[in-house]
Image (cartoon, rainbow, N blue to C red):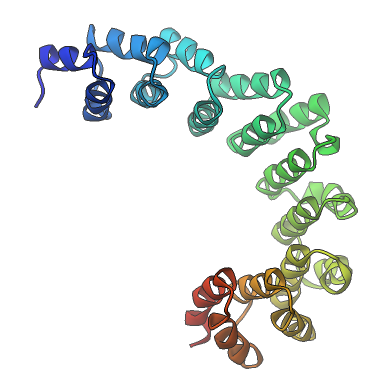
Length: 286
């Protein structure tokens, strides 16, 4: 085991890789002064981004110590991949202070990719917290489709039947990702004839392969056997994106004899993505 004196020497080394190795060696062990102070210094001042990030990971178990939260806040002004990693760690922490830092970041940035990262990490927020956030942010109507899609995905994870109307309304969104996420969200809160009635039009007529695949999965799970015909049509499509979506759907629908030859055919598809999706489905049709 490395002694505190040896650890301090490595953390203070002029060699950035030696500092990096020292941070990895700390792991989840309890930080005592002055090692803790050196890790904080690296998180704030190190010229190497990988060392700043490594120091944050070491400091994460020390949350919500005041000096730790200050460091996390400072790194939210760092380069993009550091910011994304900090947002992920805040989502994992998920307490009131972390959620406040996440939502503050959402309102402070104009970058859609950062807003999406925030939305992807609000999964520990309560429904009331999310409701208040959505009212204030109007994220469901954001001009960027990726932000709208991430918002629908976030709400879908709540599995709240009272959001039925919200998801049905999102089926009319111009962006296919938003519609696809809305279909998935409806599948979490509805079933049977009601679900089949809502998603059937999107299973047969939506211009997006992803929306159709998601809708067909729900129809087949609801026992609508006619949906198999539309899934087979997708499996024979000339566009590999549609065939890949068909293979993806076959991974999630109840196995049926009519679909077995199509799964095997798609597993031998010339397109790598199609074949990969179908290979994952093969065990279910063995």
